[in-house]
Length: 298
Image 1: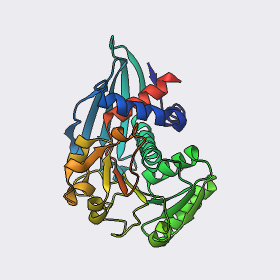
Image 2 (image 1 turned 90 degrees about the vertical axis):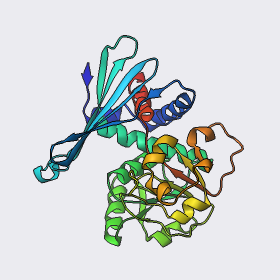
Image 3 (image 1 turned 180 degrees about the horizontal axis):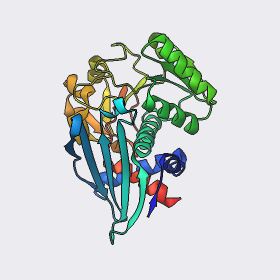
């Protein structure tokens, strides 16, 4: 059985193959061809948590294991560590172990990019990226790989953060510029929020033709997106059940769940009404399985 580090895992997950794999996983999940249970969370010492997220199809049995250890900050070690363990579904033979943090980061970006292409109806020429952390970096690099030459309008918590982030992207060959949120949103086709904020990082009023994508918040207490926009727009999610439990942006806005739609429904809908739209992603074990399919198909 192969055990791959972060770099080797990333090499097996190019977005040109991962995005179609995520698309297929969404359709397979909707058709009942992928099975996943709710994630298990167990306590660890010093306030830590151990999470297990299993998923199967006819070929693979996959479990992502993640240890969240806040005390590691003081030790100079990674707070979040993880791995994806893969076996053959038919006979249980162990196949490979992938880096779980890389899998999560790249499949999350793949969902975002798939959502943008599906709901916008075309690749964007420019977009706004709010956030300067690890998820924002992964998304920026993914956007540059998927859409060469795309203009990234970067917004940080402060001007200095945004400028430093944009400079780091420029040094890696991306077309990036730091702006204030007001400047960045002017005539923007897409705005993506990738923060851990507890309150909205976008203004209440946004042009209806701007597609809003929120991916950073992951608890009921977190909300990057303004409630006014959640209530006014078509709302799409990658996973409805997960969103009902984790999407603070939607929960705090008291969204009408009867009008929340799953992205899989839009994948084959050529007659999609495209504005105004909002996409909130929360993740699903099936997207990890999509990454496994991609890695083992190479």
